[in-house]
Amino acid sequence: MPEGNATFPAVIAIQEWWGLVGHIKEVADRLAAEGFIVLAPDLYHGETASEPNEARKLAMALDRKQAIAEIEAAAMYLRSHPRVAPKKVAAIGWCMGGGLALSTAASGSQLDAVVCFYGRPLEAREAAKIKAPVLALYGGLGTGIPVSIVQDFERQLEAQGVVHDFHTYAGAGHAFFNDGRPEAYHAEAAADAWGLAVAWLRQYLQ
Image (tube, one colour):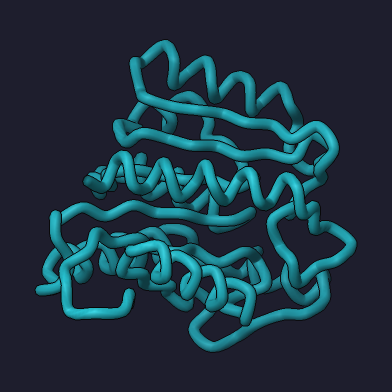
């Protein structure tokens, strides 16, 4: 929660494949300091990982339909919260969470905006269901998500008239925003992406 007793728009912060770890909680606090009420659902229900193999197992075991249902429930809860006004909710996610944010937007949950940090783009049939404005942020050196599918996704949103903005940071890799992972963190790209993300949320949650 932001400080004070005023009302604020709301944001759902969606975890990476590591789980609801300290980094995501810190980002939720940063969003609150920017003037948003933030809910970060624990999609692994108490489990977290510190090594890639552990994270991979947790991510593979995740029931995506259930996770999307939990994110939708978070949106419903936030819209009903007395301190949320206007009654608008966005989703912001990183890696696995970025993909889940997009999938939730395509599920009919009526999110008011999406910020996707290096999440896997949706295939055309799912992308066609998105109506919310999408900000997508990728590292140009990332190898897990081919540039071609990011471009296909952008063209799909363009064709269906969805408001969108895509940024690729040439010198940054995947997970460039995660300052808890020194091997991946790219300070310049992270700072620029954060400014874009906050501005996007403010613009579409007014």
